[in-house]
Amino acid sequence: MTGLTPGEARGWAARLLLAEDARWVGDVVFSAAADERSQAYPALLLGHHFVRIVFEGSQALQSAKPEVGWPPLANILQHEYGQVTSRVRHMAKLLDDTKRSHDQVLAEMEDAKAASHVTLTGNAHPWFRWAETDLGLYQIGSSVVGASIPMAYRLALDPGDLGRMAGENLHAVTHEWGSTIAVLAAAALDVSEMRPTLALDVRIKYRDRLASRYLKNRYEPDFDDAEKLLLLMIEGDLNTNRLYLPLTQSGHEGPCLRARIVTTYHSLTALRHILDRHPGLDTAGTRSIRGILADPAAKRLCSHDGKMVRNRSVHYKMDDPSIIPDFNKPMFGIIEAVAPSFTWETLDTDLRSVEDQLADALGSWGK
Image 1 (cartoon, rainbow, N blue to C red):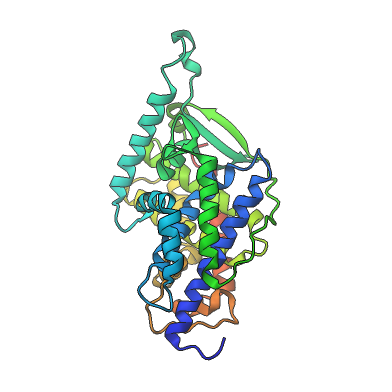
Image 2 (cartoon, helix red, strand yellow):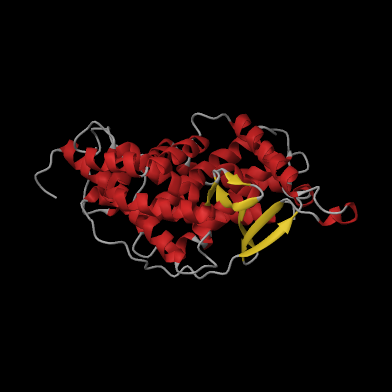
């Protein structure tokens, strides 16, 4: 693109990134809707990314900077889709690691576990209560890609009915997301109709467990259940990156890379927090995780450059005057602009290495 000032180029790049992410979400939602068995999985496995995109996209379109903001679209979001933007604004706060302490997250995870236990147990005849369950596991093959209690915590799901989010039917919420995403996709002046293009036909198994029994031997005996549930969430997210996200990648390489960056960066920082709570714990499991955290690939992802790439994968608005988008490069050259030690290719290589190592270590930890 020629004839743009640096500020205009940054604004246009922000809109293009938003539109790319929005079209990815729309394709995933509409592709899954064609198969009744799989239509809930995008919301359950990727809903936290959908929340991020809708919330951050809404914020960008409301910007006072004319090269980024677009008042007509912002008004449509406010007046026609105010309910969903209000809902995701609330949920986005749960995901903002800069405003919630690690201890607060663990306390809230413990509350989610207690709510699930109260809701789902104590209802059977006393003779059969040994068979009651309060934790659902979603698996691709033998790998956990999601668990009901972390899902309920992160997405305001009803612990007794994961088909309801914030009091609303999950399918209705997902459809509402799709409608909102269609508005966000117009940020790049592309108003073409979204069509499903993805084959999301992977077999996902569901298994019921009792949390106290399942968690007893997972990870470390010294960890409390809230820490174990956080580890289970991380394990599921990393396996989703490896096993489910690739099904959504065709034609959406940029959004999928950004989703992987956000997940892996937050997983690494959360794992470091958990290990820092137990500095004297020296077991095969903790040594394995510490070894991965010390690996050059993980250290690069957690470096200043890694954090800058994470920030640019979350927030669309770009105020840094040193960022000069190159529209001929992947992600418009923003990776190289904010993180000189990375290219698209080296970042992808580091992500795959860390995802595979962590998923393997977490999956075998305590088994």
